[in-house]
Image 1 (cartoon, rainbow, N blue to C red):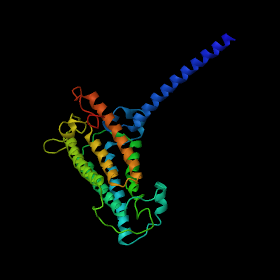
Image 2: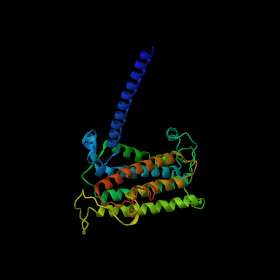
Image 3: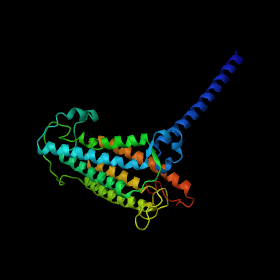
Image 4: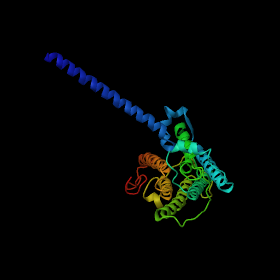
Length: 302
């Protein structure tokens, strides 16, 4: 009957509404949880009091990433030198390399070793910065972020080695640091890599000066300020922008057929953009006179 149909229809509408409300509430709760597990430092001041307060480490543990990174990259370089100097074959490594990618190795051995050398330069510089220059606040980062960072720097050199001839093949190759075969994109990548590393170092020094006095001694570790000059006039997080450029430049140096590092580069770009947006929002909410024209990480765009 029409009455029965109307009752059923109203019941379905009511249940749909209830489920929708529950779904939205679940999404908000899930978003809050994700927010807690992705925030760190100053953006984690309030969030870590709920779920992640039991799973947090001091933000100064950030330097652990680069201790591991230097050791990891240096270890793969040492292994590569053993392959070429002692003419050791990498037969025992090939199955493990295939676990990371099933593609035929696309990176020439000398180019792969050059890229690993650039990564060692970058990670060593970051280790020096985080150990001797950066001044960390008393805030924290959660264990999810900490272990994600440790995993990232463990697989960083592997994303190059797994597609490099000599590491992921059974033949022995000679090491020749020859740039004659490079194309314009690779040269542009190298220039961008050096430029981004240089400016990231300058930005780290500029950030550290906020918490140091004129003599260089550490003052208030928890002070924050609006920075001006250089890339800070355009974006809130130029250090994140430089990190994105560093990984993009390595991608440009590697052959087009090498895909493993491209995935890692994509992850870094998304991660840094996400962190920059959170940091940008924090600055805007804490400083009423924050420059309105300043973007988060990409000048004039994002």
